[in-house]
Image (tube, rainbow, N blue to C red; front, side):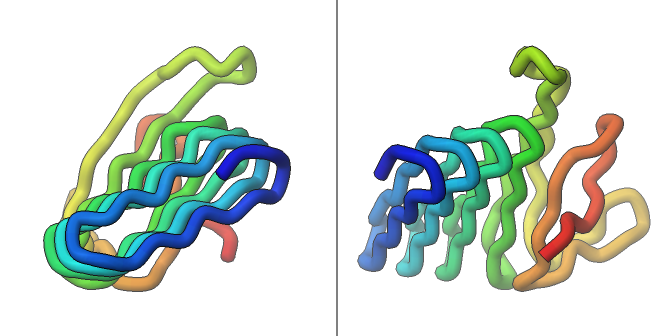
Length: 116
């Protein structure tokens, strides 16, 4: 899906839900699925074993169920990438457990909870 406030849902084994456009959402469910959002303030959500939620846009956020992986991107005000981090939901990151079904973003190079 593309366009402001767009939504891209996907469900099935190894499915992909891509979304671009400001404040858009990509959501996938199913084993080994991928949800990727690239627009400003975009969100990506994954539900299923070995799935990915990729937030690639400015101030993007991602969440997933236990066992999913989050790929978070931090960009500057011009959209240039500052850093990218990957973390597994349910694992510890810097002494803090990454919680299932909780939105995360990158701020100042750190993985932090995002506003719901």
